[in-house]
Length: 51
Image 1 (cartoon, rainbow, N blue to C red):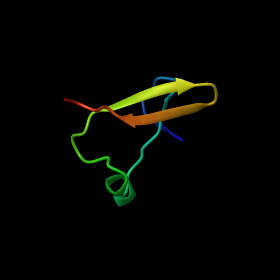
Image 2 (tube, helix red, strand yellow):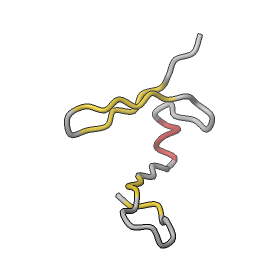
Image 3 (cartoon, helix red, strand yellow):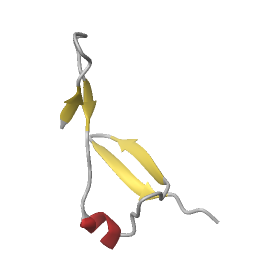
Image 4 (cartoon, rainbow, N blue to C red):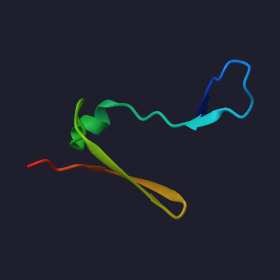
């Protein structure tokens, strides 16, 4: 976990960056829509299937 710098403002916002070729190998390509679900103690990231 990191944070987004806010200049001189206190309380930075949490930030999570996920990247790597392994994302392509699991179907997550640049430009794909995703759904992020928040569950107890975890984030679930799914491809948003568009018909």
